[in-house]
Length: 212
Image 1 (cartoon, helix red, strand yellow):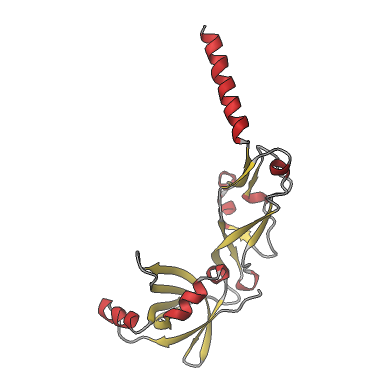
Image 2 (tube, rainbow, N blue to C red):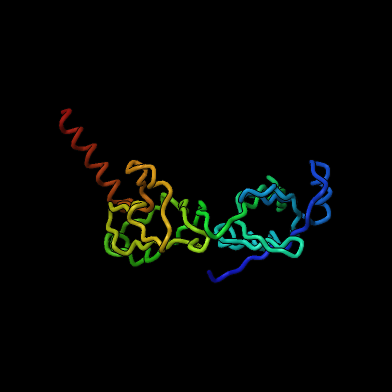
């Protein structure tokens, strides 16, 4: 992994809505660090630092280092609560992780070769994304920042499914563990708009001819 994220945290004694409002006015974000058989630890984080980190796509699918009381704990971001109207982070949920326990994380998909795709370049089709992220299961050391999906070989009318994605070592897709019915399409190459309209018009004309 090319990026390291460190969160400087402080223990949080006061809890409740009133305490949380005071923290936010002071430029802090209330958060909770939990999991791995340890007691949940209420903490506070610097709001500006959190906002800067959230601008990075990798922050959402990365092992974070939470520094608290001279010690560092590994964690992943589980939930972000945002103000509905203002650029304010209301709360973070951070889940502790350990090297020998598998985790489940939603990882973004990066699509490559869209412009040079056979169905687009020669067939005039359009790329349609059915998914932009996928939930994976792996040990923390194998967690990818993103998964690359190459669409170069797709033609008009083709779809690429979850089972066809090339995965990094030690990574599996959670949905596929539920059976073949969950092998959903990830990306498709749609027919050109003009061709679709012509087919529809031709079908209507054929139906009209039969009716007469």
